[in-house]
Amino acid sequence: MTKRTVRNLLLTLGVLALSEASGLLLMNVFDIPALITTVFVFAVFVISLLTDGYTYGIAAAFISIFTINYTFTNPYYGFDFTVPANILSAVIMLVISLSTSTLTTKLKQWQSLRAESEKERMRANLLRAVSHDLRTPLTTIYGASSAILDNYETLRDEQKIKLITGIKEDAQWLTRMVENLLSVTRIDSGMVKIRKTPTVLDELIDAVIVKFRKRYPDAPLEICIPDSLVVIPMDAMLMEQVLINMLENAVQHAEGFTKLSLQVKIAGDFAIFTIADNGCGIPKERLANIFTEYYDRQTHTDNTHGFSGIGLSVCATIVKAHGGAITAENALGGGAVFRFTLKTEDASDE
Image 1: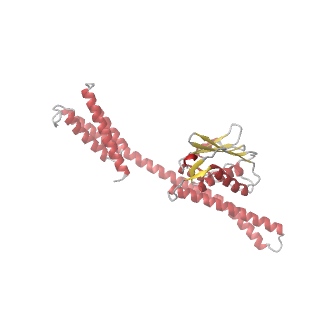
Image 2: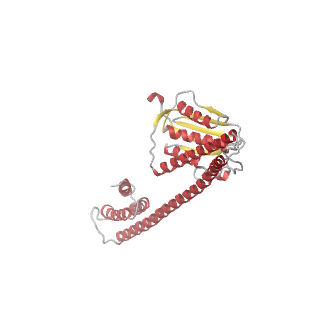
Image 3: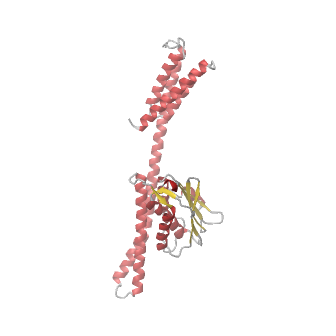
């Protein structure tokens, strides 16, 4: 027996039991027996609406018919189906059950089709974004390597070093992009299970800073974290990827920024991570879908890589897999602010 079946059974039995209790209350305490049938009709409607398929609603209708006839109709605690009112109530409840179950089933089918259509749309957007973003670095790698092979004897050493350095940087960028794609697809498909281990916040931030500085040694990064010991259950490698992706996103696409900060605050049982810059900000029309759509934060006219939003999708996927929440907004004074929360753990319990 599946969890879904158990849920449907418990819901059906619970609603019917509540209806019978309400009926007894109406008859014995308030002396309003006329409302008892209405209570059971409403119960059949609720069961048909909240359960899967037709079975539970129809079963609830029959159980309600026999319950009303046996418990709440004279002669009490005996069956008598010759009364026209009982027959009419039975027909009404069956009609309500069938109608509601039919509408609910069709609605669920429509929602399923819509969800699948949305997934296909996102896959198509992802493929277009990936195709676009792969083309630029691959073209650069091909052009630089061809230039070295075709003009090896005539190129000066500094020219060779510059071309090889460009190849290396583009290859590193492609590697990070592929890692991001794998993270999104594996977590979304359930192939990767989040294994949380108690992680000291200071150690996490130190690891992020070391990796970030290797890529962007001149970025004006400010760090602000609590002085006290903070322990957070998490997959440390995945959370490193989240923070690096978000910092890298700011460096590459916050046009004109002069400040970049990573701040962590503790509020109750939660750690609030904030990455903020004072750059160009995010277009208002894209804020609502920034973690699901694959878009360019700005139009790039130089040799930098266009950003498909894959890094932000990775961030949202990993944070949600940890049970956290993630948001993005524009700061009042300019720039973008990304914020996500994680559940903390009392260090004294370790």
